[in-house]
Image 1 (cartoon, helix red, strand yellow):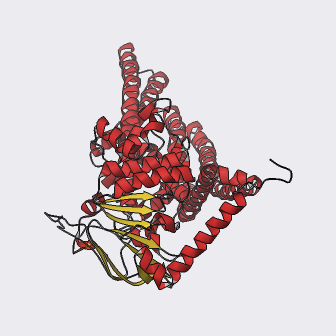
Image 2: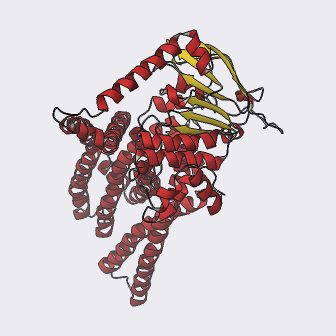
Amino acid sequence: MLIFAQRVWAVMRGYRLMFVVSVLAALAYTAMNVIPPLFIRQIIVWVTEGEGTATGLAVVVAATMAMYILRGVFNYIDRYWAHVAAYGALHRMTMGLYTRLQSLSAHYFSRQRTGELISRGVADMQALENFIAHAVQMIVLSITIPLGMTIVLFVINWQLALLVFVPVPALIWITAWLSPKLRAMWRGTREKLGIVTSTYQENLQGISVIRSFTRERERTDELREASYDFHKDIVRANKFTTIPNSAVELVSGVGMVLLLWFGGRAAMAGDLSAADLFLFIFYLALIYKPVLDLARANEQLQTALASSDRVFEAWDTKPRIYDKPEVVAPEKPRWDIEFQNVSFAYKDDLAVLRNMSFRVEEGEVVALVGPTGSGKTTTVNMIPRFYDPDEGAILVGGTDVRDLPLHHLRSGVAMVMQDVFLFNDTIRKNLLIGRPDATHEELVAAATAANAHDFIIATPNGYDTVIGERGIRLSGGEKQRISIARALLKDAPVLVLDEATSSVDVESEFEIQQALSRLAEQRTTLVIAHRLSTIRNADRIIFLREGRIDEVGSHDELLALDGSYARMHYSQTLTREWRLRTETPVATAGGS
């Protein structure tokens, strides 16, 4: 609890004074509720003892009116400033979490579901904002106001005050006993909500796959099961959360019954004035209301604690990939690449790269080929440090990539991937990710070189056309050409092409290959391709098998070697020839 308070207080930097003022305003607002009963008590004394005057009554009425005006002012300050401070803290926490997530390596995201991370960044953050804006004031008021009223009652008649508060220790024990259990329950509900969010998101993103395989019912059942698990957990959490509320109602009823019985008898015996009996009854109702609010605030507190566990768990995750202290970019950078005895495994017992060594000179085009799972994509992903090697070193310009600033390294690498990701924004803004300060003329030049300009200007709003989530309004070939134009605009000295044409038709592939040829000019280029016809002109071809280099050479040299590359080449050639024969129309008998 103390650590939670310290961390929340830390993220409220810049809003602390406003938050403290809102709490003080809440205290003042509640104090305005405490003082009027004392005025009423005085009026009752004047009436019963015949000591009142018109002037005195006017003063009390005026003071009461002033109290209600001040209540409105303090209530506004409390509610408005508390929300400003809470949303300020929420903004800082949201950006802090997002910044940390951005710094984490691909290892972390490979173990997390996107929807789960979204749940932490939205639902859990909202729970923390709700706690800051409402529960803190409620907790402060629920402790200070009853304490002040209790002191007044003990001053008036300590024996009666002690009697009506007899049930309170039981209430405190119930709340203390339930609190750790409630926190665990609410953490479970937040995790189940994350699963629901993740499943919902995945189903919507994969709706075309679900439909094509007619798996609507199965995916619906999976979401229903996740939602039902969340439903069960939150119902169970609420079942126990409502116990303190119900206990407060019971305790307040017991306290009121004791007051009416013993206080009424004392008043009838002349041991307690009617004015004091009124004040006891009025204050007792006000005392138990904050205690009831405290029970409700405990629910918000347990939810916030559970949410903070999840938020700060991600926030505290240490990046595996980071800049060393005082690392600087070279004044005259070179962009040759060398792998020196590199080994890497995603899991300890599953090596992906094994003692790999090769070199790519500046301006050279090197192709990586091999069967699925041989480590091609992992190899190129290690150049911009999406992963670091477990053993060995990767050098760029003769310097270990771990001794180069991440921004410098990644700015020097442009990647065109098989799975193109485009944002739900305009074509222009998707292109400008490559270089935000590019002019329109540079944008058009890059799109033209990528064979994309003609189809872009044919869209409803040209470069300002919104292309939908992940570019859904574009064809596969169009998305690839946008990706190539983006890489051209970046104008990086190192180019990585990972199956950039594998998912497009032959006509689109020809246009994309033309664009890629322009893109690769005078750049250090690594190409991954399953279609060997696309890389036959590479300076060198490296054939990988099970994370090791099996063969190295030019296209002709590897064919002459008659090894793994040659077998893959002839297999693809025969397959292509067979497909051409089977797709050729055959004249029917009697045809002309």
